[in-house]
Image (cartoon, rainbow, N blue to C red; front, side, top):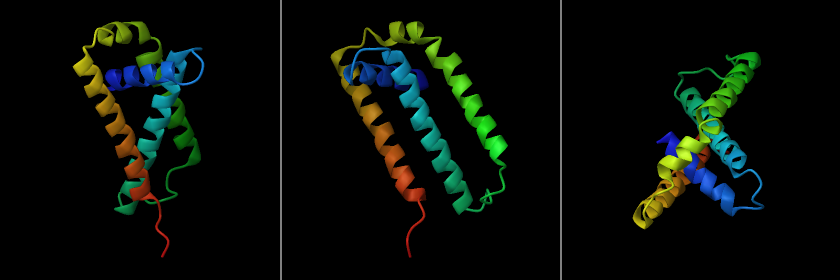
Length: 121
C-alpha cells in the first residue's frame, strides 16, 4: 500500500511544477505526510494519556526523524524504478481508484491534524 501511495505522489509530482526530479518530489511529499501523520498519532496518544507531553527528549525525536528520512530513501527512492514498473500498466479504472485512495489519504491526514490540534476554550 505504501508503494502505491508513493507511486501516486510520483504521478502528482510529474503534474505539478516543472518536470525536474518528480521522484524526489514524491519522496518529499510522502515524507511530509508521514511526518504529519506520526505527529497526529503522537498528539492523539498524548490526549489520551499514553504519552505525557514533553517527556520525549528532542534528540530522540530528531533521531527518529532522521531514521524515517533514511528509511524512505531506501524503501522508495532507491526502489523507484521497480515501484513505477509495478504500477505503470494501470487501467483507467485502477487510475481512478488510485486517485480516490490518494485523495482519501490526504483528506484523512488533514482531518487528523484538525482533530488533534488544541481547541481554544
